[in-house]
Amino acid sequence: MITSVRTLGRDFPYPENIINITALYVLLVVSVATLIRSTFGFGEALVAVPLLALCIPLRIAAPLAVLVSITIAALVLAQDWRKIHLRSAVWLVLPTLAGIPLGLLLLASGHQRLAKAGLALVIMAFAAYLLVGRAPFELKRDSRRWLLACGFCAGVLGGAYGMNGPPLVIYGSLRRWPAQQFRATLQAYFLPASILGMTGYWLTGLWVPTVSHYYLICLPVVVPAVFLGRFIHHRLPEAVFIRFVYAGLAATGALLLIQAFSGRI
Image 1 (cartoon, one colour):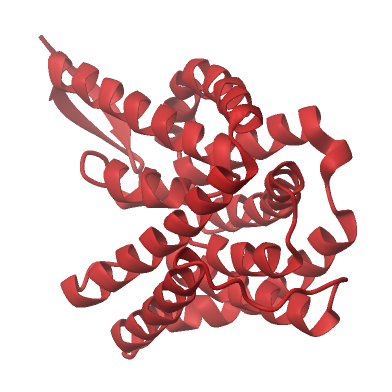
Image 2 (cartoon, rainbow, N blue to C red):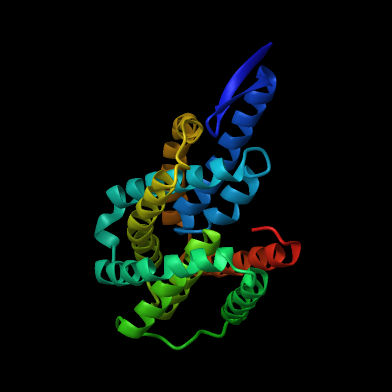
Protein backbone atom coordinates (compact mmCIF):
# COMPACT_ATOMS: atom_id res chain seq x y z
CA MET A 1 0.00 0.00 0.00
CA ILE A 2 1.36 3.42 -0.92
CA THR A 3 0.64 6.59 0.99
CA SER A 4 2.27 10.00 1.13
CA VAL A 5 4.03 12.01 3.79
CA ARG A 6 4.40 15.74 3.72
CA THR A 7 8.06 16.53 4.23
CA LEU A 8 9.62 19.98 3.99
CA GLY A 9 6.60 21.31 2.15
CA ARG A 10 6.37 18.55 -0.48
CA ASP A 11 4.48 15.30 -0.77
CA PHE A 12 6.51 12.14 -1.25
CA PRO A 13 5.08 8.65 -1.76
CA TYR A 14 6.31 6.06 0.77
CA PRO A 15 5.29 2.47 1.40
CA GLU A 16 3.17 2.47 4.56
CA ASN A 17 5.37 -0.13 6.28
CA ILE A 18 8.42 2.17 5.88
CA ILE A 19 6.49 5.02 7.51
CA ASN A 20 5.56 2.77 10.43
CA ILE A 21 9.14 1.58 10.90
CA THR A 22 10.41 5.17 10.79
CA ALA A 23 7.83 6.27 13.36
CA LEU A 24 8.75 3.41 15.69
CA TYR A 25 12.44 4.26 15.34
CA VAL A 26 11.76 7.94 16.13
CA LEU A 27 9.71 6.92 19.19
CA LEU A 28 12.52 4.69 20.45
CA VAL A 29 15.22 7.34 20.02
CA VAL A 30 13.11 10.09 21.60
CA SER A 31 12.14 7.92 24.57
CA VAL A 32 15.78 6.98 25.31
CA ALA A 33 16.95 10.60 24.87
CA THR A 34 14.15 11.83 27.16
CA LEU A 35 15.06 9.27 29.83
CA ILE A 36 18.71 10.38 29.77
CA ARG A 37 17.80 14.07 29.96
CA SER A 38 15.24 13.57 32.74
CA THR A 39 17.65 11.45 34.80
CA PHE A 40 20.79 13.55 34.50
CA GLY A 41 19.53 16.96 33.39
CA PHE A 42 21.40 16.98 30.06
CA GLY A 43 22.87 14.59 27.50
CA GLU A 44 19.97 14.02 25.11
CA ALA A 45 21.99 15.74 22.36
CA LEU A 46 24.26 12.68 22.36
CA VAL A 47 21.30 10.51 21.37
CA ALA A 48 18.51 12.50 19.77
CA VAL A 49 19.79 14.46 16.77
CA PRO A 50 22.60 12.12 15.56
CA LEU A 51 20.36 9.04 15.69
CA LEU A 52 17.23 10.74 14.39
CA ALA A 53 19.21 12.08 11.44
CA LEU A 54 19.86 8.48 10.35
CA CYS A 55 16.22 8.02 9.34
CA ILE A 56 14.69 11.49 8.97
CA PRO A 57 16.16 14.68 7.46
CA LEU A 58 18.33 16.76 9.77
CA ARG A 59 16.05 19.74 9.03
CA ILE A 60 13.29 17.72 10.73
CA ALA A 61 15.38 16.05 13.44
CA ALA A 62 16.89 19.26 14.89
CA PRO A 63 13.64 21.20 15.50
CA LEU A 64 11.94 18.01 16.70
CA ALA A 65 14.67 17.57 19.33
CA VAL A 66 14.23 21.19 20.44
CA LEU A 67 10.45 20.79 20.80
CA VAL A 68 11.00 17.68 22.90
CA SER A 69 13.58 19.59 24.96
CA ILE A 70 11.00 22.29 25.75
CA THR A 71 8.53 19.65 26.91
CA ILE A 72 11.06 17.87 29.12
CA ALA A 73 12.23 21.10 30.74
CA ALA A 74 8.66 22.26 31.40
CA LEU A 75 7.66 18.94 32.99
CA VAL A 76 10.78 18.77 35.17
CA LEU A 77 10.38 22.37 36.33
CA ALA A 78 6.71 21.78 37.15
CA GLN A 79 7.83 19.01 39.52
CA ASP A 80 11.06 20.40 40.98
CA TRP A 81 10.92 24.19 40.64
CA ARG A 82 11.85 24.61 44.31
CA LYS A 83 15.28 23.10 43.61
CA ILE A 84 16.26 25.72 41.00
CA HIS A 85 19.18 28.02 41.66
CA LEU A 86 17.35 30.84 39.86
CA ARG A 87 20.11 33.44 39.99
CA SER A 88 22.57 31.08 38.31
CA ALA A 89 20.04 30.08 35.64
CA VAL A 90 19.28 33.70 34.73
CA TRP A 91 22.94 34.68 34.50
CA LEU A 92 23.67 31.66 32.33
CA VAL A 93 20.82 32.42 29.91
CA LEU A 94 21.68 36.09 29.33
CA PRO A 95 25.20 35.61 27.86
CA THR A 96 23.88 32.67 25.84
CA LEU A 97 21.97 35.21 23.75
CA ALA A 98 25.28 36.80 22.77
CA GLY A 99 26.97 33.46 22.13
CA ILE A 100 24.35 32.00 19.77
CA PRO A 101 25.10 34.39 16.83
CA LEU A 102 28.82 33.61 17.13
CA GLY A 103 27.98 29.91 17.09
CA LEU A 104 25.93 30.36 13.93
CA LEU A 105 28.84 32.21 12.31
CA LEU A 106 31.17 29.40 13.35
CA LEU A 107 28.75 26.90 11.80
CA ALA A 108 29.07 28.71 8.46
CA SER A 109 32.82 29.32 8.66
CA GLY A 110 35.60 27.40 6.96
CA HIS A 111 37.33 26.77 10.30
CA GLN A 112 34.49 24.80 11.86
CA ARG A 113 36.27 21.43 11.90
CA LEU A 114 39.36 22.80 13.66
CA ALA A 115 37.24 24.74 16.16
CA LYS A 116 35.10 21.67 16.87
CA ALA A 117 38.17 19.52 17.47
CA GLY A 118 39.66 22.12 19.82
CA LEU A 119 36.46 22.41 21.84
CA ALA A 120 36.14 18.63 21.98
CA LEU A 121 39.66 18.24 23.38
CA VAL A 122 39.06 20.88 26.06
CA ILE A 123 35.79 19.22 27.13
CA MET A 124 37.33 15.74 27.18
CA ALA A 125 40.37 16.93 29.12
CA PHE A 126 38.21 18.53 31.79
CA ALA A 127 35.97 15.44 32.01
CA ALA A 128 39.00 13.14 32.32
CA TYR A 129 40.40 15.38 35.06
CA LEU A 130 37.12 15.00 36.97
CA LEU A 131 36.78 11.26 36.35
CA VAL A 132 40.21 10.41 37.78
CA GLY A 133 39.12 11.99 41.04
CA ARG A 134 40.85 15.35 40.83
CA ALA A 135 38.17 17.78 42.00
CA PRO A 136 38.65 21.27 40.52
CA PHE A 137 38.64 24.31 42.73
CA GLU A 138 35.25 25.09 44.22
CA LEU A 139 33.22 28.23 43.67
CA LYS A 140 31.77 28.91 47.11
CA ARG A 141 29.27 31.38 45.62
CA ASP A 142 28.15 32.49 42.18
CA SER A 143 30.92 34.11 40.16
CA ARG A 144 29.73 36.67 37.64
CA ARG A 145 32.79 36.05 35.45
CA TRP A 146 32.30 32.29 35.43
CA LEU A 147 28.57 32.64 34.78
CA LEU A 148 29.14 34.96 31.84
CA ALA A 149 31.94 32.79 30.40
CA CYS A 150 30.03 29.50 30.74
CA GLY A 151 26.77 31.01 29.49
CA PHE A 152 28.50 32.57 26.49
CA CYS A 153 30.29 29.30 25.63
CA ALA A 154 26.98 27.43 25.99
CA GLY A 155 25.47 29.82 23.46
CA VAL A 156 28.35 29.28 21.02
CA LEU A 157 28.12 25.49 21.34
CA GLY A 158 24.34 25.61 21.07
CA GLY A 159 24.34 27.86 18.02
CA ALA A 160 27.01 25.86 16.22
CA TYR A 161 26.36 22.26 17.26
CA GLY A 162 23.16 22.16 19.34
CA MET A 163 25.13 21.13 22.45
CA ASN A 164 24.67 23.76 25.15
CA GLY A 165 25.31 21.32 27.98
CA PRO A 166 29.10 21.06 28.56
CA PRO A 167 29.74 24.61 29.88
CA LEU A 168 26.68 24.29 32.15
CA VAL A 169 27.98 20.99 33.54
CA ILE A 170 31.38 22.59 34.14
CA TYR A 171 29.83 25.48 36.07
CA GLY A 172 27.60 23.15 38.11
CA SER A 173 30.67 21.04 38.94
CA LEU A 174 32.61 24.09 40.12
CA ARG A 175 29.66 25.15 42.29
CA ARG A 176 29.24 21.61 43.70
CA TRP A 177 25.49 21.70 43.16
CA PRO A 178 23.65 18.74 44.73
CA ALA A 179 22.17 16.33 42.18
CA GLN A 180 18.58 17.61 42.41
CA GLN A 181 19.64 21.26 42.20
CA PHE A 182 21.94 20.43 39.29
CA ARG A 183 19.12 18.76 37.34
CA ALA A 184 16.51 21.44 38.07
CA THR A 185 18.78 24.43 37.41
CA LEU A 186 19.84 23.05 34.04
CA GLN A 187 16.17 22.76 33.05
CA ALA A 188 15.60 26.38 34.09
CA TYR A 189 18.32 27.22 31.56
CA PHE A 190 17.18 24.85 28.82
CA LEU A 191 13.54 25.97 28.82
CA PRO A 192 14.10 29.60 27.67
CA ALA A 193 17.10 28.61 25.54
CA SER A 194 15.05 25.96 23.72
CA ILE A 195 12.11 28.33 23.26
CA LEU A 196 14.49 30.83 21.66
CA GLY A 197 15.88 28.09 19.44
CA MET A 198 12.40 27.00 18.37
CA THR A 199 11.53 30.62 17.63
CA GLY A 200 14.52 30.75 15.32
CA TYR A 201 13.37 27.62 13.51
CA TRP A 202 9.90 29.14 13.10
CA LEU A 203 11.26 32.44 11.76
CA THR A 204 13.46 30.62 9.24
CA GLY A 205 10.63 28.36 8.08
CA LEU A 206 12.07 25.14 9.50
CA TRP A 207 9.14 24.43 11.82
CA VAL A 208 7.14 22.55 9.22
CA PRO A 209 4.06 20.30 9.65
CA THR A 210 6.21 17.15 9.64
CA VAL A 211 8.03 18.37 12.77
CA SER A 212 4.70 18.88 14.56
CA HIS A 213 3.49 15.47 13.36
CA TYR A 214 6.48 13.62 14.82
CA TYR A 215 6.30 15.68 18.02
CA LEU A 216 2.66 14.77 18.60
CA ILE A 217 3.25 11.05 18.08
CA CYS A 218 6.23 11.25 20.48
CA LEU A 219 4.31 12.87 23.36
CA PRO A 220 2.90 9.54 24.65
CA VAL A 221 6.46 8.28 25.24
CA VAL A 222 8.02 11.59 26.34
CA VAL A 223 5.75 12.16 29.35
CA PRO A 224 6.22 8.72 31.03
CA ALA A 225 9.97 8.83 30.24
CA VAL A 226 10.25 12.14 32.14
CA PHE A 227 8.60 10.63 35.21
CA LEU A 228 10.69 7.45 34.95
CA GLY A 229 13.84 9.56 34.71
CA ARG A 230 12.83 11.47 37.85
CA PHE A 231 12.24 8.16 39.65
CA ILE A 232 15.73 6.92 38.69
CA HIS A 233 17.30 10.30 39.51
CA HIS A 234 15.96 10.32 43.08
CA ARG A 235 17.34 6.83 43.69
CA LEU A 236 20.85 7.39 42.37
CA PRO A 237 23.46 7.93 45.09
CA GLU A 238 25.02 11.39 44.82
CA ALA A 239 28.48 10.01 44.00
CA VAL A 240 27.11 7.73 41.26
CA PHE A 241 25.11 10.59 39.76
CA ILE A 242 28.20 12.81 39.59
CA ARG A 243 30.26 10.06 37.92
CA PHE A 244 27.56 9.60 35.28
CA VAL A 245 27.49 13.37 34.68
CA TYR A 246 31.25 13.44 34.15
CA ALA A 247 31.06 10.42 31.84
CA GLY A 248 28.33 12.17 29.84
CA LEU A 249 30.55 15.23 29.54
CA ALA A 250 33.39 13.05 28.21
CA ALA A 251 31.00 11.37 25.74
CA THR A 252 29.86 14.78 24.48
CA GLY A 253 33.46 15.78 23.82
CA ALA A 254 34.13 12.47 22.08
CA LEU A 255 31.11 12.95 19.81
CA LEU A 256 32.31 16.43 18.84
CA LEU A 257 35.76 15.03 18.08
CA ILE A 258 34.33 12.23 15.91
CA GLN A 259 32.20 14.76 14.03
CA ALA A 260 35.26 16.98 13.51
CA PHE A 261 37.29 14.22 11.88
CA SER A 262 34.36 12.72 9.95
CA GLY A 263 33.32 16.12 8.62
CA ARG A 264 29.74 15.70 9.86
CA ILE A 265 28.02 18.68 11.48
